[in-house]
Image (spheres, rainbow, N blue to C red):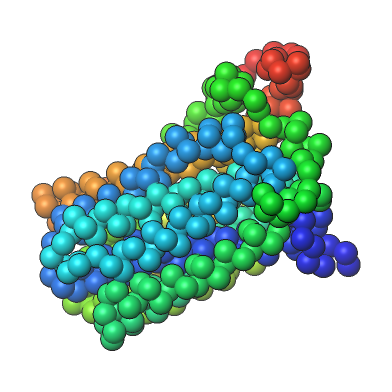
Length: 448
């Protein structure tokens, strides 16, 4: 029963970890719902071109592609007596609140795309910053046997935060204007700031720099003290075959996510004649269903059947779904068909993300967890930004059928690649790495 009690230390019990990381992922979902979905739908509703909308989404996706620059700083520097990553989580959350507020003050946003892109860029920058710190802290404190379940909860709550903010943001923008809508939703992000302030990573650490506490032994042992150690550690683990194959695969899957997320509001509003409010309601309801299922059974399926099997299943079904949709052009105007497509796709996308996150965590070496995990996520987000950017070019030269077929090719690439991943073998290699007298050594060489 002690595991169900809410402790102020993340390492004490599972419930504390699940609650904390779920709250932090809701905080990520709220601005993403506005910037990646509500604003593009609003722009489409106001007759902005696919190229303009894709450019906006591409620009706000850039910071997510370069998270790898931030992660080594977090592995190298921190206020260790407050935890390895918690100080960075607090800083990122504060920046996210301020930048989220700033986009509401962009003058004449419909005719000021550069100002809108700039404000959106900074939201994404601090969102990516908070994401890196949160993921690094998760790898540090969540045991391997909880990672799939934790990722189910984290991704599910993020989807719900994204969906609810999309519905609320769209309704507020249509009724009360752009600035008021953004300012109102930023309050929810600010409230979640209480969570990283209250919960410590490990017992005895400081809550804030001016309070009492000390550095834990675990943090001292795993904290790296030089850039050379970080580079050596990262190189040693990333050069393993499973790491490299997975990295290429997540980039391809990221392209699919970027393409679908960007084309969906454009396709539904400008091709099918939906309003932005109608799109946001459909998207939110279907996404919440997917997020809810992901929270409660996504992690369980990965634990039960294994990461490779579930990744193979999700990728195969997703590729078939998008390919079939490309060939049923006569049914695109059928509301039931569109509802079914959006529901099945976003449910599969949620389950796929849970499996990808759990797999990425399993491949990580705790010593450079933030940097390594962020490398995978940066490649995924680079794929998202690339997918969003290329959509405008593809749509300018081809019809929607070709766009969907191009999108369907992305999961097939990862499907082929993951067959070369061996998690057990990779784990043996990672566990063989040790740090001795501040110098990284491998006690034995295990051939791939």
